[in-house]
Structures are given as structure tokens and as C-alpha cells.
Length: 227
Image (cartoon, rainbow, N blue to C red; front, side, top):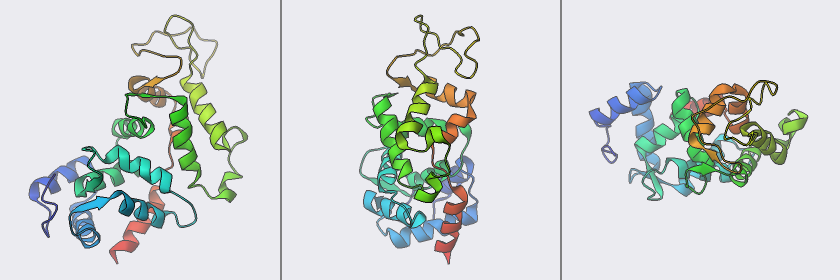
């Protein structure tokens, strides 16, 4: 994917990354040089990726979350990330367009890659997120989401498995409303990609619950690495 071993980005890859991420040409070129310095082969291993995340969160344990993020971006499943995969990962985990980000979030939660999300998979990812939240910050979370179990239950309840027996979903935010028809297929114990994306787009609070997003902290850390 691109001329990852060259000392300069190929024009094609540079244009592709500029078009599909929020990063400028100057930022991409600077990060590419840093990437090659850290990874002369043009590839980053899972262990190196985990090390990068650890530098972002020195007071926490991001290992499990980093491992899941790595899996979701290792598109060819070769156990490494090239520069393109790495930049796309940074872009989507610290910003990105809504639909792109939701497609990635679904892939993150779909731990076994079977095209649906189970309650156990939600619990696994949420636990990894909590490992990155300092204990003092956890104390200030709302009572119904201040543990991994509570947050996972809140997410699951929304996606809700609140069917009326006919394959329709009752509006969780307005339970007195008539159940509305939807083109998404619902299952009592699985969340499909369409259901996941539509659900989050309908309720922005769920986006907050399913992610751990500190873009400014990551951005500041990347700036430090340039100097």
C-alpha cells in the first residue's frame, strides 16, 4: 500500500491520505519521516502499536484497547500496519467523518469478525476502555455507567433488544411512541452493522458511551514526537 520504504511519500499515497483524512501535506510528510525512523521496514508491529498507545496514556493501561484497535485496522490480517493503515487509524480514532467512524467502531466491537456484535463483545471492548480511564476520573462518571458492566449494560439496553415480537424496535428514547418500521433486521442477542450505525446516528449519547476519545491529548503527544 504505497511506497512505504521510500524516504518520501509517493504522490499517489499522499493525495489519497490528504483526501481521506484531516491531515495536511506537511503533517503527513513529517509523520512519515517519524514513522520510518521508528519502523525502518515500513511496517509497524502489534507490539510497537501498543507501545505508541502506552505513550499516549502513561497513567493507564491501554494494552487491550490498542490490541483491538490494531486488529480493526490490520485490513489484510498480516499482523502489521503500513503507513497508510497507521494514518487511517489515527484519523478515525481522533476524528473522522461520522459514517467512517461508525463503520470503524463496528469493526472494533465485532471482535470475532462475524459481522455482528454480541453482548460479550461489548463488555470486552468497554472493559478495555475503562483500563484507560484514570481511577479518579471514573469516580466522576454517572452512576449508571461508572463501571464497565454498567456501561456495557446501558449500551446493550439502548440497542435494545426492545422488540415487539414483529421484528420492529420501540424507540428507546420515547417508549410511548408506536414501534416504528425499520429496514434493519433485528436479533435478540446480536447487533448488526446497520442497526449499530443507525442506532448511534439516532442517539449521539451512545457514541460517547462506545468510545474513548481524547483527540487533543493524542494530538499534543504527536506534536511532542515531532520535536
